[in-house]
Length: 261
Ligand SMILES: NC(=O)c1ccc[n+]([C@@H]2O[C@H](COP(=O)([O-])OP(=O)(O)OC[C@H]3O[C@@H](n4cnc5c(N)ncnc54)[C@H](OP(=O)(O)O)[C@@H]3O)[C@@H](O)[C@H]2O)c1
Image 1 (cartoon, rainbow, N blue to C red):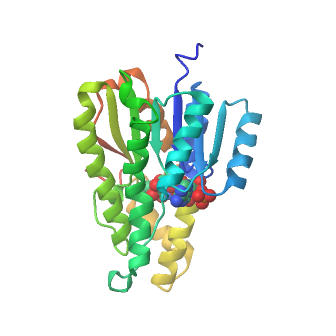
Image 2: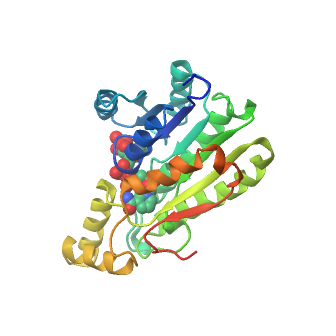
Image 3: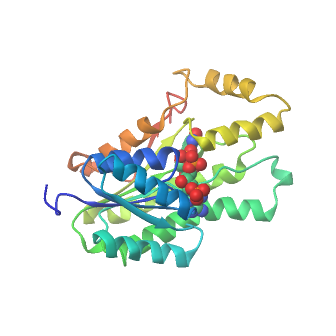
């Protein structure tokens, strides 16, 4: 496969859960994948692990909340592999509680991490990442079914993910004539370290244990179980193909039937 066919993909939040599964799949599709997370140690360990699997990946630490880090990250990716063909904005955090008790600090951090970062990273990839000069490209934002319906005790998270869906639809329409598609992938409940932290939070809020919360959540999902990170990555892997060229400005669920919207 030539370097032209091997496209360059950028993935944020790649050391865990959905981001890690996305990197594995994109690299298995023979793309060169550059990724980040805040922990440099975890990035180095993940690069080592994936290279041992024969995958072409590299990465560096970057906090997507930091405009300087975003610039440095995109430049490092271009220096390493060339201009960017695929961007997967995946890094995110949970966060909520009774809305009357939410601090400015928590609200702003959730919005900064989940929403402002998506705008800044996308702008940087379009400009210094070189995507806007290309005749095709793929931008995929990992939003959530919480970006389409309100989640109780999750107001900042739901607001941030609704923002991501709105950004995706607007930019998708804007860039449609250019050959760059922009879509959101909306997972429901996915078994990752974040999902475990979320269950802990609800167990504390409802004064119960995590097993009860797991049961309650599973009962809401028509499929009866959490999705896997690989199932979410599978849709990302499809959206980057040539066949997906006419899918743009969409927010597509991977949720075991949880969301019918
Ligand atoms: N799991 C679910 O049920 C679920 C459902 C719907 C949507 N989602 C969305 O899917 C995405 C991934 O979630 P996940 O469950 O895979 O989470 P996860 O297991 O907690 O992994 C998050 C990844 O993002 C990185 N990260 C977190 N904050 C970052 C920051 N400020 N800058 C750069 N990297 C950062 C983490 O590494 P460091 O901590 O080292 O930075 C880690 O690599 C998120 O956007 C989440 O909202 C998840």
